[in-house]
Image (cartoon, rainbow, N blue to C red; front, top):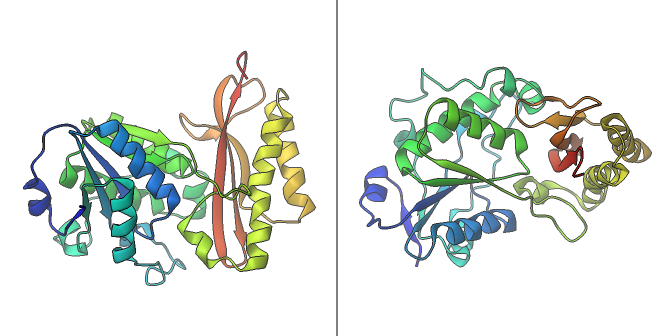
Length: 282
């Protein structure tokens, strides 16, 4: 049975034998989160411990992003977490995470956090990294798992853990998709039927870019762009990115890149990406 905890003291009092794996969420859990939890269960092992955090972080919401509109479904979240194999759900109140109120000292994402999603959502990654740092301190995990769908978030958390010497292994888990290709997201619930059909252009564009290889990065981008323009679907960005620093992967790039897209479909802003390898093994 999954234990619901609201304080760090209660979490620290849990008996702990093997490795602890944490999955950090803002709630509204879906099959993508369940996949993260099941992967955490496999990595932690039967003797280990899986903790799911549920905390809607106010620092991640910028101007025009409705914090109050974000879904809060704790009872349903606990059921999803339990079915996927979580030992505990840690759902702290804001004053447990930020006991002094809004923190005056924060983690800064730097130039890597100012590109792409950082440009579209100024300050978002500073807020995200600040709460991740706090939750890493509070949960004290050996492993922390993140979905590859939020590729820039994953890259920044990895960089923070490395640069600031957090004693934790950051694990990326492949994106979970609907049968028609739409990447799972808590925001999908806000799509109308027509908007959901339009949203499929994002994954179709990525798959078209993937299928264009072994073409150059420019040709991959062109193949993906053609899908978006055919809808037409205006987009915030469509880019082939070097995941080490989130700069553009230019022609001649070798190694693993990320083909990423962001667009607003109706009132809902969606992101998606796929990994692509360029070079001898593509």
